[in-house]
Image 1 (tube, helix red, strand yellow):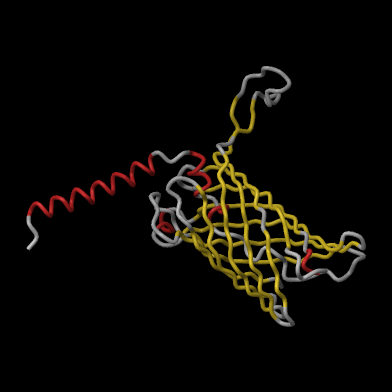
Image 2: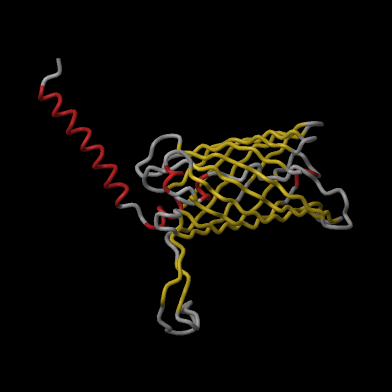
Length: 265
């Protein structure tokens, strides 16, 4: 039978662990709160590469992709990060040139909805818009990776101190394509700035970055992210199944897993 002293020691250990988590969450910087609640950290918009190819070199062709992903921390973190269902739409444009080959430009938007108990309190978690470029080099040479860049602007933490964030994603995807299916391996380093805001400033000269209204854009210190995964696409249906892991390198953050579907009609 457990002695009273053992019970007290166990209770003290539990209290110490809870207080440590509370202290860690309390000292979380505005930058980390902003990026931790953003879709930049929640789930990648995989697959990165379009699942269709422009054949006509005389004009720009386009397609729309719809996707839905689920992202959640792999282990419990100090901040009680909520899993999110991420719903996205992307407009993809491609153009083939006789000298530079094929390249693509895309613009997309994603909406993050909290799941589990959090959905009852505040279902909307985060939103994101992004503008991207892809080389699509693998089309003309399968040994070359598809390399790109996304400029990302988002808002996260709705219902709980909403904050804006800005980021740059650099997806690199190796594509292995057969007659009816495609396997893509994805790695995506990124850098993000949280706590994006307008603040008043003092006009001290032409190099003070202060506008006519006495306002300037300010952001927190940069944080780095790394993600990766794989995607399997059934080419006749243009339906993709993707999964992966990514990590925001900030105090208290844990790796997050994601999985989802993408479809191009």
